Image 1 (tube, rainbow, N blue to C red):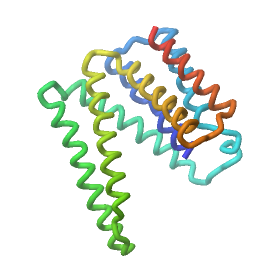
Image 2: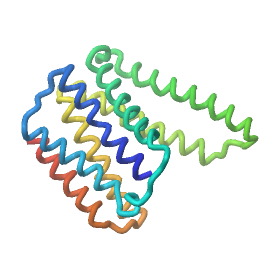
Image 3: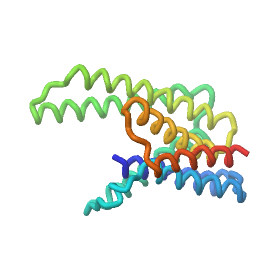
Length: 198
């Protein structure tokens, strides 16, 4: 889980690189420092000494998560830049979630029939709640990109805030003990946001 979380968040370098080369986002020393701090924050907040001792022969799976997550954010950025406007914004987001919902429902039905398991209410309710949260997450991301803020800044700060909020929930709700690495990662995340902002 930690490795997946780290590579998913570090994949922000892909949409940032695309924004710099395609959309000519500004890139100066402070911004580079901020992005490097952000990557260090993501790594430290998701890693632990135990994770360093674990190895896997399926090294390509984290790589696929990294590429896939980066391409998803890049696709949203490209769509917003070239195709989405005020009149079709809701349609774009709705079509994305409708497609995901239909495909997910079909795959779930096929999977449950093969395994002869019944869908639980908790799974369906949890899926709906997660879908609503993700819908508004994408909605506000597209809105943020639409108002003219540089996408390299948006993706950096969004990922950093996810890291910070995840840590806050882990420490408060799940009673995880904050270790040195994670606290350092959170500190770097806050510092990176300040550097990127200014």
